[in-house]
Image (tube, rainbow, N blue to C red; front, side):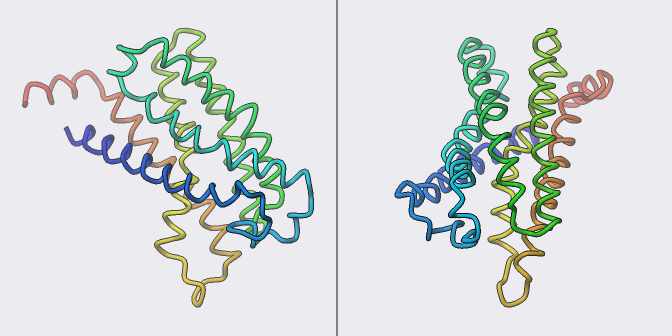
Length: 218
């Protein structure tokens, strides 16, 4: 029951923050180079390649977040297998073909200095690895492996949300160095999400004796 409540709360949080991200992203629809995050990237906004990858990323990442919401419900999978596969393919193609290449370029020019750049590069490598592993496992018919790596992949996807939560809760311009805080936040959001993914995976792979014991005590 506790796990179910946590999952519901997590899904609700992701949905709410995805909607908020859509609101944030809407400010870029006018392609103004002096709004939002771009105010901090004035050194590269004149670079057409960087700007192209930036727009590709911001206009597609929310689709990854929303697609993932439906993919971890056993009930949804049982009742909508074809839709589950279709949404899963959109999620995988979005990450591997669109966002991993885009984020690689963006990561090279990341805020946060070398700390931020290395953090984003690691996120990108793990994002690709976990997603590819999930695909390979399902092609072999290994559902347990597929679910495990999809949880890890989605953990990396949602670092965008964790990053913003940490920034909004703890960053104070008068007290923190922006570059250092930004770089540490990149690493912190990744670590927090991977730890959360570890406990989710562990909860789904309890030994049979533990499961039976829990069921008998209900």
